[in-house]
Length: 187
Ligand SMILES: [Zn+2]
Image 1: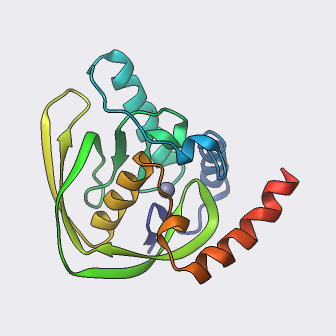
Image 2 (image 1 turned 90 degrees about the vertical axis):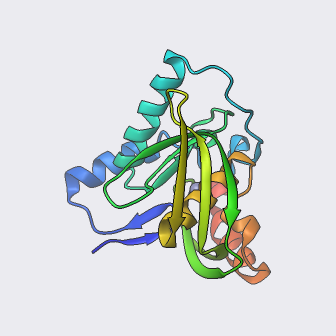
């Protein structure tokens, strides 16, 4: 049984599937890529280019074994993400807005496809209502809880250039940066 941690599903994969995951991750911007810190702009045109982008993001998310992926993570500064609103479902949400969030919150470890190998505790609302449009421009609305509410909040943050390490405790952030900094020097 896979454990879902923020944007990442933690499970053992067979070698072929693992190779596919690595290829997908190589196409996803990795911390400290500048695009990850940028604010995405609203989508105005629902055209073939948008459909192509949405398809590519869905494929990358699945290959990377994630449960969400935001456009900023593929270097596109537009407000859309793909995510799983429930098990075995995939949705594209364009110009997403969290229109309601519970006062009740929960802290859990969160991973990110752009910050590999780093898990930090993040406090999130336990239930939310997410509104936006699908890739064809039709209005969509999702009532989400648990890991799916967490994933949608994680993806929404990406569109504002906010990462898990910006939302965690000062100690966890310090520890995460200690892991990430040597990688930056080496790459
Ligand atoms: Zn992420």
